[in-house]
Length: 344
Image (cartoon, rainbow, N blue to C red):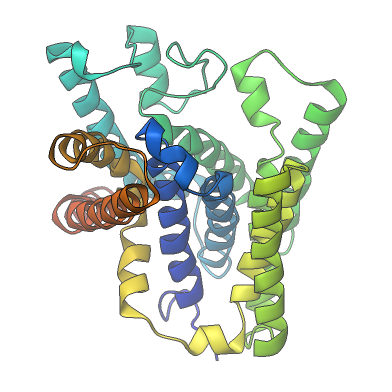
């Protein structure tokens, strides 16, 4: 028997959150020191975001499917969960930039970009002209998340049996618009018609299937699907066939994780990382910036496989530890306080 939302966390999904966070951290570790890049693997870590998006759709469905929740309450809960830490870290970064701009190689802050960043409005980056990034770069995924939350919230007024299908149809329609009429120069239209929206739809569908099949997949089938998903992500990071391969791969990973063997497996370390995923994700850019400077001064940046691997392993450990501490000391108590005061 798998846990329902009222019984507790779906452990394999929580473990995947931690693994996806480590993938994204590694993706940014490998570009910190140019002389190390040739010794570290390719673009595979970026696919952690694809896994995140599928998981997001999954969690939003299973946590609302058997609950009576209005759109306004849903959005309030999501804002409490997502916005405070992001706002605090964005403000901190801008304050440091204002006090010591020389510490940043690329950051460009204007009132417009600050406002757009805080309120999850996709916009063209001034620092990275070909990218749609907020000031705190990892927050680009939050622009997608918030858009998905709005769509999901609006469909909560529908009957429970129609709601997940409505979410999927609307997201697929937006992606089709992008395929047929795009690509768009507008940052808003490019974001809101991106193929990445299909990952949220896939997560919602998986959530519905999982709730309808309490035992999940058999262990053998689930593991096979799980491994196939990872194989697709790895292959696409090497050959770069299509972004749709990543979408399928991430969906298969989440689907495969929901098997009887994984549902019974308990791992405290991965559970902790899963709980602290959001803090790790948002804070690791800060941690890496400081750690890179310290490593360069104490160890050096001579290009070698040993130095590169040592840097990557140590940086990963430091980023995870810093993220867990941030979660325990700030994110968790702050979220609990705001939920008690604003939601009850």
